[in-house]
Image 1: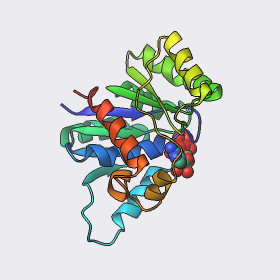
Image 2 (image 1 turned 30 degrees about the horizontal axis):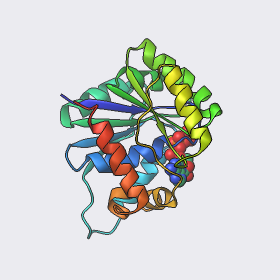
Image 3 (image 1 turned 135 degrees about the vertical axis):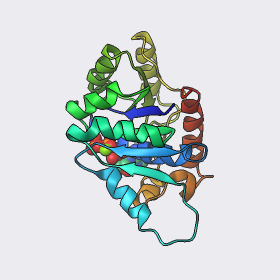
Image 4 (image 1 turned 180 degrees about the horizontal axis):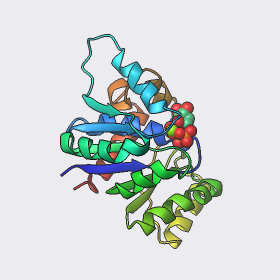
Length: 211
Ligand SMILES: Nc1ncnc2c1ncn2[C@@H]1O[C@H](COP(=O)(O)OP(=O)(O)OP(=O)(O)O)[C@@H](O)[C@H]1O
Ligand SMILES: [Mg+2]
């Protein structure tokens, strides 16, 4: 049975697309993974085009890709579920029709936030919608500094609200953006960097939620 992982957050620039690309590469080591870009900005599509245009040589993780959205999205999801083990959906920074479909289709929802109040507030709509659809949603800190007081305060507030926050978090690291700019996942570009280690730990944690 295919598993659908939807990455959603109404706030722009939270790290949805970055996570989709790097996690996709990480999970492709053990699963047949397809990425599905339903954001009209098409950033993930651009990343995938860079990847496809890379000169042959170093082996890249095999990834399926689709940017079908709109009225064909439901049928496209059914098709991808037949052909792949894991579908990672990168959604736009607003909850429009497609994003609702992507949340409804999700087995697991990841909601990236910077550890600061506005990011958590911006996530409330996505979290409420996931809850109303009875979808398991997990917040993940992105661009988080290791031991800031604000990070601890935010983690405490998230726990108080009864929300789930993943233990794994990503720091603000140029490695993520640099790998993305080359059409690579951090696990391909710099697996032993701090960014690479953080991403691998996060992927391992998420793997525990993906039956
Ligand atoms: N942990 C990080 N370290 C360094 N740069 C990051 C990190 N996370 C995201 N970025 C950078 O921040 C920018 C926004 O990230 P990204 O495009 O993934 O956000 P998004 O949530 O998909 O945005 P949108 O809502 O517009 O689709 C990108 O330039 C990305 O490379
Ligand atoms: Mg994006």
